[in-house]
Image (cartoon, rainbow, N blue to C red; front, side, top):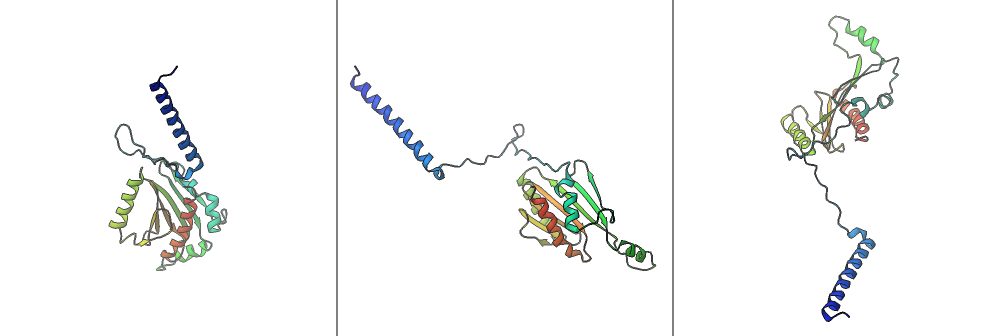
Length: 209
């Protein structure tokens, strides 16, 4: 037969169990009140620094924006306009070029003495710059924005985390997480007009990131 202390301890134990089950039931019925798991930064166990994030484009520079996407975007007749793509290992780099539709006339004009040079082909360069961590990417991107403002003179809203444009370099830089996409495009007659087309290229790339 249980004594008074045993009975009291048993009642206390049962009470604790009932409170636990009641709390568990409330959490199941109210999932919105559950605590969300915290985002934990991955740390390098040797250095204690934030670990570098993966870069799937390191050796796939021409996959970020595919040949088919470029051909469709610019309406290129690949065979007639000698469409070409080249990449570099470990650089996240892709160079594409194709002739302008009136390239023969432009080349003939360039052969005339004293005539201003006319570019007879289009070029598109895409490159993924890997800064390892989001913090490093943010610092480097803001450094370019601040110290090279005379070159990258224009902020471009609505692309990635942040974006800037350089008319003199025909280049659009877009930050996305720990990566920065640099798009250099020589396509339109007026240098600044390349920006609107480069933005379309950037959107194709950002869909995959």
